[in-house]
Length: 187
Image 1 (cartoon, helix red, strand yellow):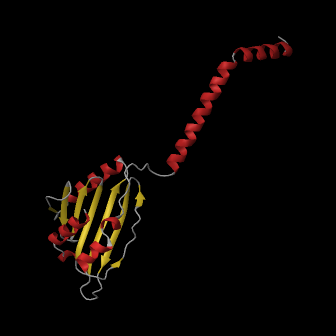
Image 2 (cartoon, rainbow, N blue to C red; image 1 turned 45 degrees about the vertical axis):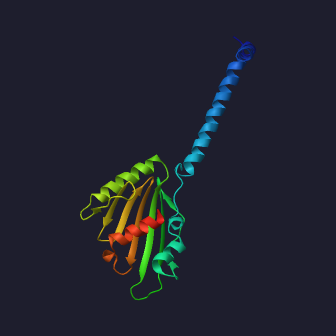
Image 3 (spheres, one colour; image 1 turned 90 degrees about the horizontal axis):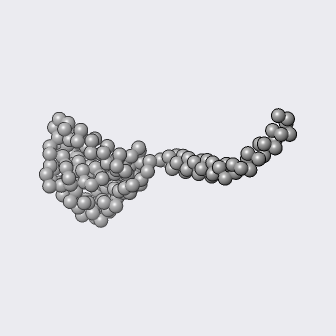
């Protein structure tokens, strides 16, 4: 077969199979586009299904003033920080009393997707089983008090809340009832 015949046969084959080549080209193009979209989505972090809670939306200055008095000072940022499949936000206020300063604080660890929800539940259960934790009924789906830190931990929906109300210099002296009162104000 001469080069001219080979070229003629190749052109004829391509003409006969043009629909097949166009179809393969379209499929290849779609696969490339889907791949690019997946890379962009993956590069932008985890998929957010549940919007994270801003702690200062729960513990507002007005609610803090109800507990601490007319003049309160805010100490934490409100913007949730996403790590893996959870977002953490903190909010705290102190009163103006230099001697015996009181604090009202809440930290919220929000699941942003189902993996984060599973992680929250697992980590919460592990912490709840630790030595010295006291189970608390009637708040959220599950709750416990850590007397060593004076913190009430609450699992509610896709969120793990940690509330703390009492003396800033001596958190272990904080009462469970004070923390429960704060929890009822913010939930």
